[in-house]
Image (tube, rainbow, N blue to C red; front, side, top):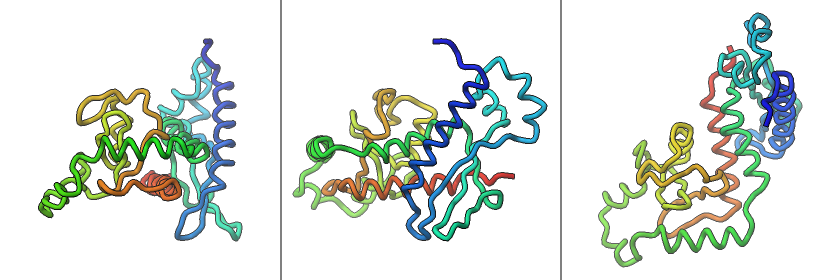
Length: 230
């Protein structure tokens, strides 16, 4: 497959941003009903250096900090944070986290997959029965609720093959650097965002509506941690 030219890759990126904005307009933040939108932005140095990068696609320009995806909030009254309070994401972050998350929210999960996943979690992930669980000390229960990486007690996601769990933030950070489970090295290369499930405890696997709200909330939390545009 022939590599895209810089102009072609920019057009493809802009088309993906436009499609992502269409998807994003359907999801609002809980506390203020804001939704987010994105736009492509060029750094001040882009005018000097982009002519030198016409032989490659836009990813190199993004890596060099010449291109950014700016994220701003829009409100029901028509106000926005555009040009005032925007967060910036790289092209890698857009294609690695933001765009796949929106596609996952759009696609959802079928009833059959819902039933299959719940059965799998109930039989494979639960390590102790109710009688054994009642014998655990409070410390043991707390240790099971902790994320094995950051040691915080957060809602966790289950890896579909090995059924190990970790919090969503740690999963995203880890998956950006590695293609294997941090605990058993089971390969994660084929794991898609839709394969992950939110796990609360060993007796409760939340339903799809709760998962949807959690995923939307996680995406807004991800934006909060992005740096502000200078």
